[in-house]
Length: 293
Image (cartoon, rainbow, N blue to C red; front, side, top):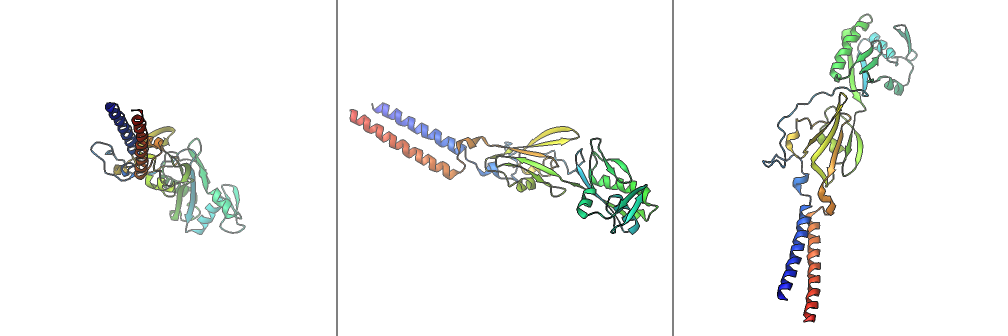
């Protein structure tokens, strides 16, 4: 009988030990959530040695450009304001390439007229120039190309060397899908990092698996999925560091969430309760055994 009691008690201890191990293994530690960690030799925090420098975003079909032409020469300024649908003066009328323009539009509508969609054939339709191929180019290249193209049109109107073109990509968005939630967000500046993107989305939840962050990215009609460990300090200056328009950032859940314990203190409390309950049941069993003797 004593041996049976000893075996029964050992089983209780084994059960409690298993429960404690499961609870502690499911806890979210600082190693799982802290960013900017140094790579480890066992590769639990990987090293990314093949870094890629930042490259300007190359335009794709569906992107929108905001383009403005500026000049200190008032005649040239009036010419392009009219050609783009917004006159410099109230009631001004102009004729460019036999097309009549009236400068009496509201500012909101005028801003829309400064916006150009990259069409399926990779071009934008720009006043005076017509079709201009821009797909695969960055904004700096488009700026220089426009200034060169426009020079042939404006040299008869004023000092074409005093013309400057501003080109910006607008309505640039990225998406985040994570354990905390999902949403679409704006890329607010030219070089937006993955850290800034995650922060703007409200950070990642405690149960987000930072070791397997995926970015779905499309370039030149080809979609690829890149996976990296955002905890590693080595992602700086790598291809994962900067967010591009239309990126989809996906962060899956940690497997341990199924246990429902996310803090060490909670694990200890539950463990203590389990041990206490085990002792209570064991005491009842002992009384029953003693009464049966």
